[in-house]
Image (cartoon, rainbow, N blue to C red; front, side, top):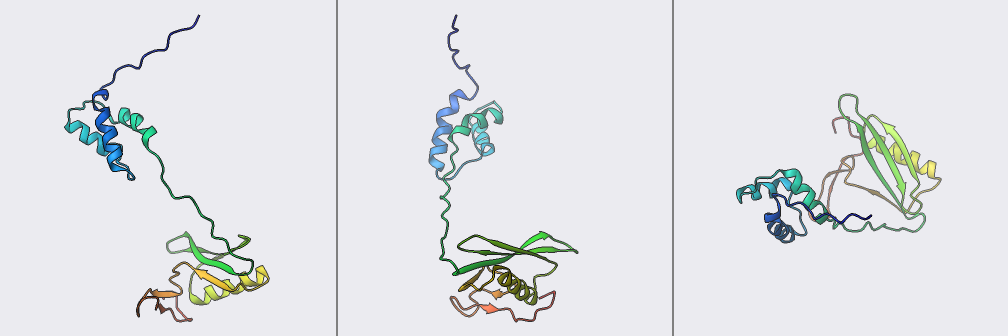
Length: 168
């Protein structure tokens, strides 16, 4: 014996579904949080909870993120280098990470500071580890290198001196 498919039960949200879908479409490509929609619906007489609303709008939330595009380089052309904070505070701990653009091979060295002298030492050690020198080393706005971007005009930055103390 086969049971008949049940019809969905009516909810307090039913009279407001058209409005909710209209608001979702109008907001695209952005998203209106459920709490904001809930507040709007309450002003229009909705007496239900936010959980029901969240369940109703979940299938309509789509991620329109740009696809990840991998930047390809030829062997020996590029190395990316940066400090990553592992622990902040009085006993700070950073990780210097150098990654080759072609192979994605990485070198990591832990440090307690990110001074220019430490950066130079880390780069030297990474190049020794990799067994060569790439044509370019890219830095992601490292404060160890750049004091102020475009300080002297477009593309003319103010660079940090090589010898920098702990307070820079």
